[in-house]
Length: 321
Image (cartoon, rainbow, N blue to C red; front, top):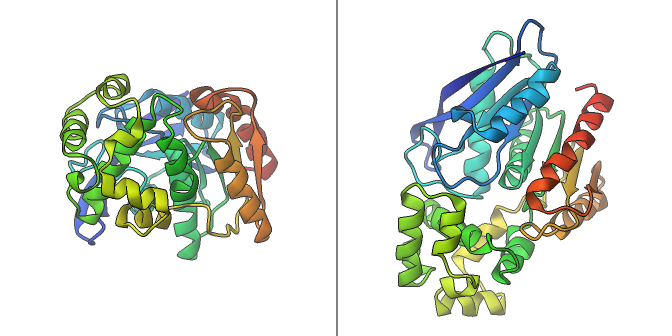
């Protein structure tokens, strides 16, 4: 049996101004939690489909981890849940700050063990987990390990390039969401990156509640048609552009983790290319890190999470987490 609570907690925006964020805490009932797991959720396009509102993935994480004797926390992220700001989708520093500040907030809560966190996430949450892992270790704080499932770790060099090909129905959604979030984070008008029509459409779709399938239906099938010609010219020539440079700065494949990392991918994933995990693992291994990439089968994006969970639980038992 598991008990869960919504958590409102203090954080800061990128300029250091105080803000309030929300998240979720779950504890096993009747037993002392042995370790702390930080769960990072995947892409959601509405403020309400988040852990603090007991979203499906938060409920699953609670049962999987708290149900096996672990404490679980899950941040909604900046711009989702209680936060009225624009969600800065896949901006590493904003995301890691939201995750780490939640860990700080639950530290004094009765029943939350004083142990280094184990970080796990899916899709956007895989990126978030490695971003938080890196930020914690840079700050000199211990991490027990990280598991990322289908994470877009190489935003500029793989994620952007693959998404611009339009190989999956969600690719236009991901790119419009990213452009909206990065423009908000770095102070640029959305119409300076997207065409006027695409900027207006994206604003309408993301600023009012729409399900992912509604956003996909409302955006062009070909992702390149979202963008202004000057951006496309820079993208095609690998020339400097603030958006491309900013996504490169938010890649989570370039640090050398001290704690072990496991990356999981589905061989048939069209949303997040398997090469994300393979390239990241190879680069980190070359720098001496304990990182491996595991193929969880010939499955697509969403099914890869379910396929990865048994691998993660086995690894947690091996780590004693």
